[in-house]
Length: 427
Image 1 (cartoon, rainbow, N blue to C red):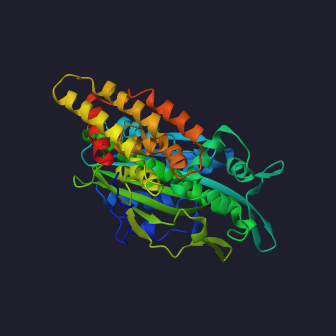
Image 2 (image 1 turned 120 degrees about the vertical axis):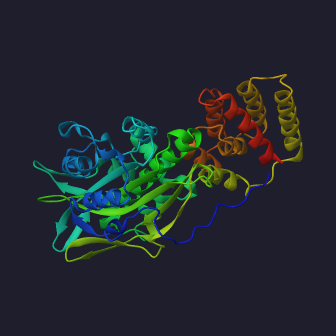
Image 3 (image 1 turned 90 degrees about the horizontal axis):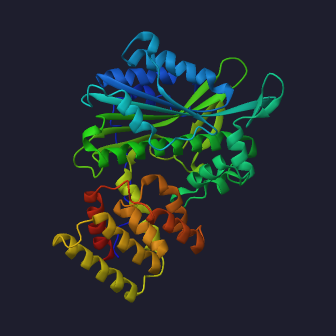
């Protein structure tokens, strides 16, 4: 098997006109500043149709954030009757991005087509604080009746609680082989008073990445349905006495580009996803987040992202020659049958290849299938966990069996392309 390492990234300019947004990164602002900057970016881009999606935590303290997005971004940019203007929205524990929601939002607002269209996605993680003199302790909040956790989902994650939502967040925080949760819980890396704030920053940053990848994946598989521009904004709501504040973490900007594998080119402008690289300070009583990383850099799209687990696997001891030989023979026979129409059902043929790969090399097989496009992108974090060696072989086989049981999401042509890509990777 042959593979190139993940691409390095280089600083360059954002892909959309976002000057007003850039000035806000890392600085605590009154609620509304980010929304006005989003509106300015959308108007400068001259997009005629704008789809909006807002992801927030279920916490009742996020009402101010949700209302402000509607009152500024949606009412300024959305079409239709004024009283009916609203974003597509998701509210759940931890402000988790749900796979498929961005393409659905784009579809809901694209009745007249995708020309001159823009999708605006805002991810709002949140954190509260209490004060000890001139020092803030993040993660706690004085509510009406008591002092409680804020955000409760992130506090559960940091405390190691095993809940359905924490399992999903834990996978995300450990993606790409970086133990972000372990770093957050290390007091020599992140001061305890700042831990909840940095965790909320990382959560918003990573959820925004999921949204970006989801849009890119949908564009790759459905090129005619892709919006022309995408803006994914990552923010931190700061729950406080009086009116809430907000801190812009960064944003993904994306534009159609036929030279890109997914058809969309993305850049990230903002803070990194590594807790070690984010520094917390306060200026005039306001939160200020900084990093030594480049402000704007190229962002991996879904196709590049799919190769990351394969890159991890290829650093392990090489697969035995007899395994390569057996899989090669099977793929060559299937490719020949498909070309000669002896076996016209590509999805059935793919299932046969998968069964053979799973028998010999389930862990490398997962990375191969993920890279080929045969595995849906929402499995990314579980595949990352397996490929990086964080899962047992039993877990890997269980995931392999779960994935290989169903290729209904693939068209016959996609299945044929997956077989061809597997053949290339295995040679």
